[in-house]
Image (tube, rainbow, N blue to C red; front, side, top):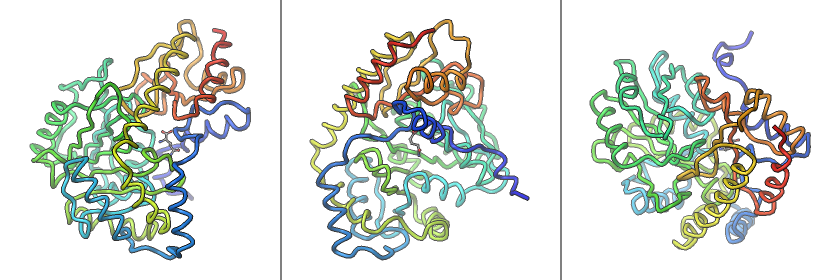
Length: 381
Ligand code: GLN
């Protein structure tokens, strides 16, 4: 007999599409990870860390030198004060940080407010921790539907999950929106769990704002981020959670028994990452900006309807006019017949709204994107 909690979610469709893509030798614009090399200096730092014998467990909540650097980065970039000794926990990717946070906060039946479209993991995070998800759809222009948000709060609401920049739609929440969310969280005694993994991937002068930097939110926010996307090392699995002391201590307990700790030598290498100059982050955003424009043009030319994202590295596109297939059928058709893999939109929606959408990532080499664009011209709908 299997635990009923596993019956409330399916295996990741994103990773399923990667497997299908490999099988059909398609270009994988499904799973969001770079196919280009990680920064050389970072690879050298990781190799040296292994040779210097940082090969045993680190302290469960993370190596001290890395927590110190994260504390500095959080102060300077996120405007959040986090004591490295009591408020920072290193985890196996921000995926574990999310799950450990939910397990630390949720009692069976508590409600979790989640904006739609949402990152695939939040459904299983809710299911495993026992939370009842309450989805609040964004408006068509990605603005917040204030009435819907207001009415989602009730006396069972425990957390609100925020993801900015958003995967899959690329929305970057504004300070005004954050203020509105913060007021609702404070009035209803709700904790914000915020996934900021794309915090450096922003376009058109958009600014990243951490809700945890708002005065009322200091003690009621878990700020989650990691190294995967900013430094193109998704396989290293180094993420972290920043939170007030008592919240952190609960997260640390869960984390300790889930994984003991994130990989020690790679944590050590991440200290080097956090010391990269400002130019690194400018170049990263500029590189993705070029890729964003390229993929956007290719999708528009082949009949998809989409907006350019404000941040992150995905485009969520409506299927071309005349397509009779749903998102899943069309995604499978694309992998098989066109040779390009994307993620069916329904992975990001509870409602039917995703059934006419696909998500494409542009976190790929220019030559990969060019070949995808060439193949997309053969789309025959
Ligand atoms: N975050 C990435 C995506 O949305 C990768 C997901 C994963 O496989 N962990 O595609």
